[in-house]
Image (cartoon, rainbow, N blue to C red; front, side):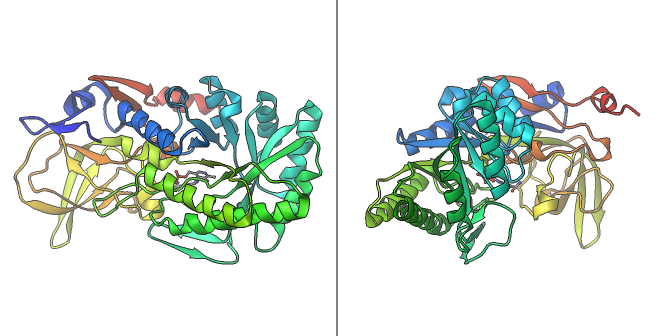
Length: 427
Ligand code: LLP
């Protein structure tokens, strides 16, 4: 982020603190999150969408009590998709009416807790769930606000999208084969459910706005069909998350105000041509808010030069703190941050300490040829889907998340200890 600078001696300072000092105090590997940057991104989304739209931060990207407090203070809402995320949100003081519950197989217990707490919306994902939520709401004597998640036949990937009639995946109810329309019929008949809108999420790490445009067009088309069939105009639509961030210098993401304008324009245009009042819009960015705000700091342990191939640089973490490279072939960059070096670049692969060869953090990188054990490496843009997808593989202790702000650093999620691990082992 903007607050990263090189000192005179070549060491990097983050939020005013030397990374060597951070490593000393918190150990490695560790995630360092720039709180000011996180808050600034929240405000940029909030301001871009304005008062007639809602921004729901997708908690799956990274959630902790501090994050919930920051979201609360910056006026964002929160999307949760499990009992654990719901408990974190409520426990840290997010007002229930600003929480949305997601998931394709929410348990009865998760639904009950959400309805009881009074969450602002539950996003319905299947026929069974319509009946389940209706039953629970009736039992609890409430009218639960719900949206229906529809699949619009858009598959979006990083740099491209495909509009198809069908999507072969587990989420939502398909527009194309009439399941979405049937779900609307069923929900409208149930007194304990209040249908407030239609939800669509088309993918993640997307740069091409065309996929969102097709999605918005098809969702508005459904609103028009609902008006024609039932005589009701639903007041809200949610177009999901999925906006891409820069992992490497080649990536060129849009700014929140550009995204807001594009979505608003297409929704307004489509509604006008269908003769519908423009519904309240919401979005659910996760990665775009938290992704760029954090980096992972590692210490180099061993270095192996394979003649004519590349140099393997092993760090003290790996696939247990960042599964994305192994799982999605994700690309990251890496930099030596504990000192300056003018040594020539060497083709390197940064790998972890786990027991498999797919344990790669950064597949191809140039690092200085004088790299040595004890050097500190930083991998930027690890704020989203790294700590939240971290594992205890090989009984690794999951790293802390340290918030840095105004020259001060504090762990908001502490490092796991061997006692934490052993406590679960009750055999
Ligand atoms: N809303 C819904 C309904 C979602 O399913 C997701 C992400 C989001 C919002 C937030 O999407 P974002 O803005 O963060 O792209 N683990 C994968 C990403 C999985 C995304 C799942 N759903 C990764 O590391 O790339």
